[in-house]
Length: 241
Image (tube, rainbow, N blue to C red; front, side, top):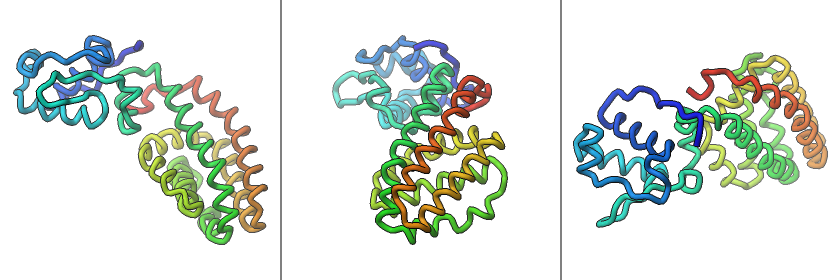
């Protein structure tokens, strides 16, 4: 793991302990598959109480950084195998070099899922699908409004398509979704491309044409991919912080 960055400066003993352990795991001082030092030793080294350390270890275990078993040493996990979307912002703070990969993965996941369930939603219930676009004509021309509408639209389609698990997946990285969408919609050209896409989808819903929906989504993927290539080459320094 390279391009390490320090986490935000700790403001409490618990935050200090978490920062130290996570940074040490990321920097390979506590490599995946190894055991953490004993609680007393680690608490003394960090400068926190064992009670505080225990609370931090439990939280990091829930996030996937560690595995805790009663009567055994705490084991360091491979975070890419055991972590969830909730730690993405922390990984970005640790290593800015992974940011293009994370953004590309978020965009790809959202797109590939949607290209399956949105045409399905329109096929199953075109009338309810059409209702999702009732406010599109009043959409404010700014990044936040577009990011919020885009998330709303893609998430609501999961329920119309009877694919609630996809909705849960979107929920799990909602914050990152909004950050990435805001990055895209900061560009007026991106907003115009998206608006054209929304209007095309709306028309396809009116026509109850799920095949046209699939064609609209494929075209939008191609158009937005060009913009994403440029964004990933010129990421703002403060993204994800």
